[in-house]
Structures are given as C-alpha cells and as structure tokens.
Length: 230
Image (cartoon, rainbow, N blue to C red; front, side):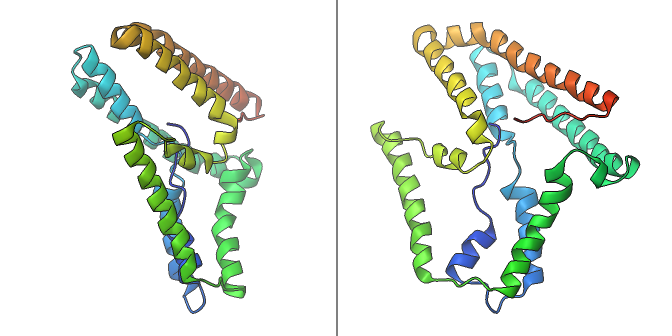
C-alpha cells in the first residue's frame, strides 16, 4: 500500500497539548528524527503486501513459507543496495547539490531544523482543549471501525490516513481503479476468478516496475535523472 503512512509524530501531540515552552529542543529534535526515520515517513509499508501474498498463496494451496522467504530476501537485498547507493551517489557525484533529488538532499534534512528553530524562537502555546481534538479523532475512527465490523456501514477509516499523504492526491485514482476491478472480479468471479486473473495484474505491476528500471538506467546513462513518482 504505497504511501499509507503514520499521519503524525510525537511532536504533533506534545506541542498542541503541552506546548513547547520550557522544553529542551535537542531531545525533541532527536525524538523527531527517530519518528521520521521509523514511523512518520516510512512511505511504503511491507505488511499489507505480505498479507496479500499469503492470502493469495493460501487460496491456491501454495505454502506461504517459500513466498515469505523470497519476500524477506528481496527486502534485505533492496535495503543493502539502497544503503550503498544513498552514500555513493552524493560522495562520488559532486555532493548532494549535484543530484536531482531536492527532497532527499535539501528539503528533508532542513525540515526538522526549521521546525525546532521556530519553536525555540517562538514557543508553541499548548492547550488542554487540543487534546479533545485528538480524543475526538480517536473515538471517530474507532466508531467507524465498529460500524463497519458489526453493521457493515460507514466509510473506511483508512481514507483519513490516505488523505493525509501528499502523494495520494496523485495516486488516488489508480488506487480506486485497483479496488474497483478487484471488487468486480471477486463479486462475479469469486476467489476462482481472482486467482485466474491474478497473473495478468501481476504482469501489469511487473511491467510498470521494469518500465521504471529502464528509465532509471537511461537517466543515469544520460545524466538527466528520472523522477519515479508523479
């Protein structure tokens, strides 16, 4: 599930409710970096893909164990390659200023410094009433979950999470098409139709990935770069 991520960090709860006056900025800065690295901005979440893969494997009697092992190996390989590339690209190509990736090498590193620099000069004033908004959001989402689970009514709460991510504005229609065709296939073809058409849709995904790889390679060869996301 691309770009479905945590919609808030610890500072988004502390600042509105408690306020930042009297707090030391360095510990908050450390906490913010931890949130951004491991929770707030993880971008692609692996668990939904793993669960979908296990569900599809179970429906056709295929053991999910080798499938999970292949997924684990691919994630580990990707982490290894991306770790090397993220270090090698700026150091061997004129530094971050020479790389066509403004967010990773410019905007993202400056964001926490700008945020806490502003808080240090003009502390955020908290209020206990802001906590009511947080509790209200929790109760509202919980109510939607209960309504869908027991009565089959209401909107899915994941819409709130998806709407909070900027890339969803560009990707929502693709997500809608995926849901729409999957619903039609499962409604009129059942699990048999789903498994029958699964290779076709996997082929679409693989074709899109291969297309991205080709353009990445061409962008690297020509020195022009390639933006994967819209």
